[in-house]
Length: 437
Length: 179
Image (tube, rainbow over all chains, first blue to last red; front, side, top):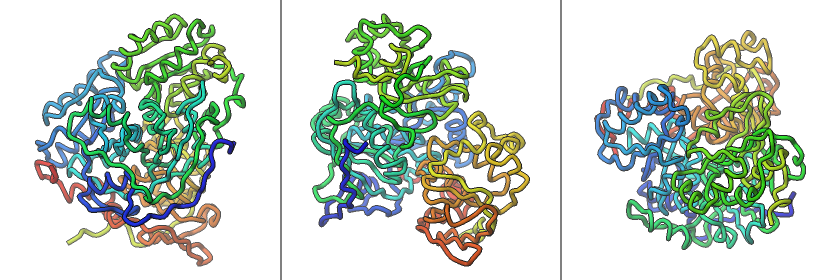
């Protein structure tokens, strides 16, 4: 398993005043000249992000107003709420949940973004995820915004601390560097890379740290692939993941920016807990067995191949981007989803949906028998078309604990969009390299 | 003047259970029950998969012990609510998954990362936990030491959770302190 990465494992000590991009972003957010890993300090997020969900936001809205007595906010543009969960039934319950959110937004003058897609993607499209910015969310998949050189950190209910005080106490994290060379071979992508990393460093290999991706392999990677990669950071124990902004990231940021921004990058000689060298050319497809993404569950696709499936899913905040839909279309063009298999494809945002439509990709998917659904989080957490007992699903969703996508009696395997699409065609977990040129 | 700590300086209890590495806390109540908060429901399902008699054997003040990366996955809150309802006073582990650590620290549960703990104790061992110093004293008198919590986390735990601390610091302010 170690043909792909060559860890130096040795900590790289700090040279002089050199800082990582993460340290620089936090120093700025903390109003400090510099910060040190382990330092605890109240940091001021540029944006405080949430999606509405019963038991979370409705409670926090009430606490902010009733318990803290806050009746106005000076800087409503720093508060950001997405409606991206619970959109699939169109029933009274959904209306009630979202109405609470809409009324909260109106009360404080806070924008509630609705009907645009999954917030972790839409935050980028709307120009919040700018290089050098610091964003928090109660949900850890906000780390995906690291693709743009922003630091996105999931703080769970501590989001309330920032809502009511404007700041949040955090420990400055150390960084582990992943130095990438080469580029993905056909049928292999960022999803295989994150699972390769987990199998290499373990499910706590980057615990309480930030994963920093560097090197020519990082620059070769498209922004969507970077987002998918960074969005899975929590499964190595990391608090976030980040790329240093390059021309591609800066060009995107300048196009969508809703605020001024000042990019930051790591200095040569910054300190890293470890550096792992990864040759993307040598990477092979990975499949994760039901339960969790931990190392022991992560196999080469050949080791899981042949397992019959009834369901396949391409979507979530860690997939469903234009690259993933192109991958699915590449596999499905001129082929059919196997009888007895349901393939659901959910573009991550409405913009991506539109682009995929314009590129003709969604026609390819539909002609192959796939169901293309509106952009939401609903398949990934078992709200839309929940799995039935004894079903087996292969998924690009973020989590595969039993019950995550429906019945606790169903099994969820995880893999890349290539692997999911190839498996949907054969009705069994399949190595996508058998069908991708 | 700072209000008195809701936690005693030293927690004393028995090791009620020892979990393995990468433990997903949702399994404490079973994944099908992770959305329930009703105390009777949580008591009825708590730890059933590990020891059907657990809820009768546990005593107020007991602790649970974990391996590396305790709380891995997408931790939900009800499993620890269930343990807290039974009187579990702290979680001691080799290390904690960051998301779990934040979520339960917010809720005021002392989480003490102590390398060596998972193999140093047996079920029902009596331990003493000096949570501010991250020191765990074993029955034979040996002490295991981890990294002490930050000053801020000490305040959170002394307050019985972040919400209590934040209310004291920022309650009834009309607008957030830092625009």
